[in-house]
Image 1 (cartoon, rainbow, N blue to C red):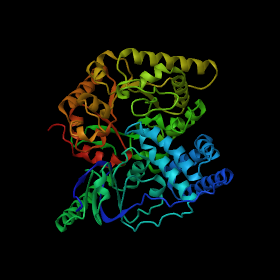
Image 2: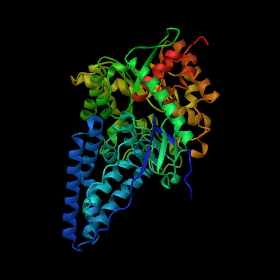
Image 3: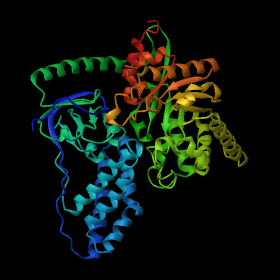
Image 4: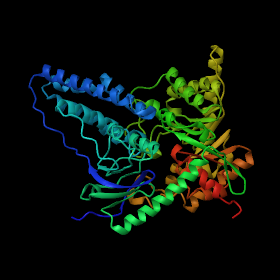
Length: 532
């Protein structure tokens, strides 16, 4: 079958690239079992230790963001909870490789039930660990590195494989599956490697050269000469725009008419901070605290205080808005979220879960109040539907601060704001008492349009530019202006230059986005004419 051109997927990291296609093999060499449970146990433990040594070596050159990911993988390999099921199966007579594969794939299946967001995106880490250990069991060495500038094509790509690849000569990634929120996608954005995911099986068939458009989410296999010429023109224009944007990225964002706009960044993991200069932004508009809960077990207060304080220190006096745990929906946490809900997106998630499980929520509020003494930290509550939820969160925060003060522990009550992502809240925003508002355009869009943003069949309906979505954004911005409180937007719309003019015309003066989107968003703001 001839290769298809212009395959459509999902953008994961912006940019344009052309290069030879390198397909990554999925097969694993066969291994002969010894038949001795004791020997199989020794072989598995030795393979795990060898995998840990591999990751430790790779960490030395991975940079801070990559090192954080690899350290997470090492922690998983060292966790008895991951290896014990495999050891039990070996004791019952199974081979080491079969036992390890079974144990890890059970974990992978649990992560995959989470859908397309944070926890589902971590399946690549587990796959990475599975295959690295299996490779050592089979006596395989590392695969040869791809040539410089190659387009890596696969079902998915593991973080360690990404970090072992030399991207200084260009290149791109085109995946049949995966997620824009995966660790590899985060790494690709920080290193400016164009990446497209969700291309389907067609990307795995044929083709020796490819053009990858990470901004549009398309891949052209074996492009004709005319397509290559167009690619070169587009890339030259893009590079010129990027150079101009990067030259001014540390300057304040101001519209053509002189209106100042606050540009903040979103953080999914503190590991990202090592590659970000705080001077490019006006603060942090969203910290996703789910990163603390994905390693097994619930984080204690001290660990949370350390993580939040680190982000506040990095911001150097700029405001930092930290969202309380947004678990549930597509982000399950074993032992905390509700299992078996028929529609978890409309179930016990966000603040609903926090109020239903007040113990972990109270610990998080205490940690946030303690970290707030180090700088201008703000707390944001997700998935708010009715005013009573904000009132309950406020009472719990007051109690946490009072407890800490009574115990002589330094603490401060941070401003308490809410995410506006539920249409019921957006339509009646005047009823809510909050110190600030932040519009979550991703969830707001999918709830307004009744179209999941990760379902390809209805992707066209899940359009942030839908007039109903823009109207709600404008109404929330107007309500904030009437109440004299700040209104920001922290969804994907904020970092898309195509939407910036509409958001500013809707009355927004604060946008929060992925760090890689700051330069191009500031350029879009500078070109915006609010009088037009």
